[in-house]
Image (cartoon, rainbow, N blue to C red; front, top):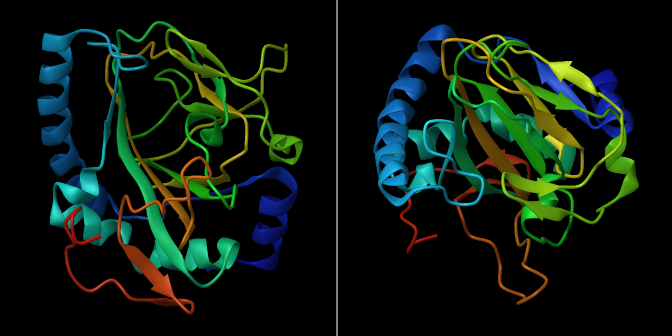
Length: 248
């Protein structure tokens, strides 16, 4: 699936865009499931009030979806993800993290520049973030922006703000990454990225799926990350059935 040119771009610039990776029908099935999970998550958020970067009626992150719905765990083990991640990271891959990100029309502020590694330490440091558009992600509704090649800076210091961790204060505007429904950008976990306000009348909907080398650990404790199933061993897909959090 990945050409040498794509792999070289990932190495040099830190990202690859996959146009129309999934069909409209596939996205409709996945989005319908996630819509229900987001609705319930948003209800709890509205009752509890703001929680760090989760803001009622603005932006909502709902994590660990693969443990809630078997269909989503099976989706995250799709051969397309296996081919992409093994081409970049190597033969043995585990789902590291998955979350929906729903940015509503009321979201008036940028989600700040950050590296995904800024949210939790991991060893080895490099993992792959797959940002999948469940509906069109546009300049108007708050698509992500990236700083090409910024992953070469390594892990930089992050400052906690009221809307998320921040790693860059400068004037570089970055490059927008609008995506059609079913298209995806895969990027290095150290790549600087942000999203802009949603100025449309619709919710920007994304499914963010992250993959790491099997056996990756939290360097603070030495514990292995097991937030999802193993999807590849020796470069071959191995996922066979739904695994609960306890089984993983």
